[in-house]
Length: 373
Image 1 (cartoon, rainbow, N blue to C red):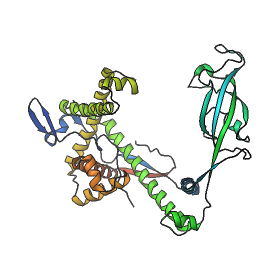
Image 2: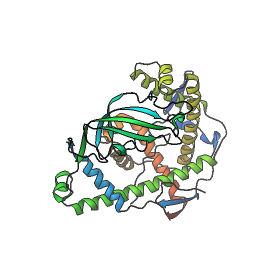
Image 3: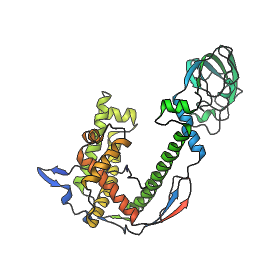
Image 4: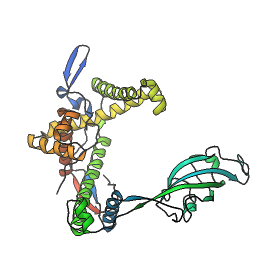
């Protein structure tokens, strides 16, 4: 069964206002002749490959593991318990250099690892360099442990430490372990809409296969659309539309900055490590890219007479609401605005039209990528 796709294109939930105003004059965006600005490529008959995503028992087992993890209870470990992978430890530690190096001397303390206290670490998470977490496995709460490690090559966090040997003195303050419940019919019945393990796993198969089907379609659409964008030619940009996108984008970041009690300039420097001039250049280029996509979409809509029916709007809005965590379609529409939701659903319909008119071949593959020729 084909699913409606929620596309995160430029148009989705960030469309240009339907009316643009400049110099005291208003223009309706639907009045534009978009073909003056861009020459669209042939968008029917595009050759594309739909790579099938296969669901197997490992995927089901992962879902079951997540289900059990959500129901796990936490046990505080004692000095008698042996630490294992998956346990979360609270530790103090300090690190020392082992050996002489160009920028470090034997016995020198690490500045960044100098007397760290009360750090929570899940053993096996890969948060620390190889050997550190496994070096605590088998030990006990209250122990002081010496862990020898070698910094990897490459080591992007600090290239100067590549290949450097180190000794960490670790004190294990406390530890906890997640205890998983027994997976059986009683657990399933108490925590799901299903009465047995068999029924629950049948639901998981159906859910994952539906998600895989939707992902296949989304990946296929993405490649077809990329082909159209890459092979169409911009003649010129509609300046007012580009400016509208740019202003909306800047306004969004200005609002973000206000939430942090910062000016836009300060926000850009602190969180994006850029200046306002550089930011505006980036925004302008992004606005142009967004506008190209919107122009191409509008050309296809006009040429093919694609329209969104009221039933499609109602059904699509309900699906958007469900997929995006809204209580209902009304809440979604109140948040984004009816015009935006309608436009996004219309773009979804355009994408399905493109798939229906493409030369699609299926290929068995579990990867998330498809190719367009």
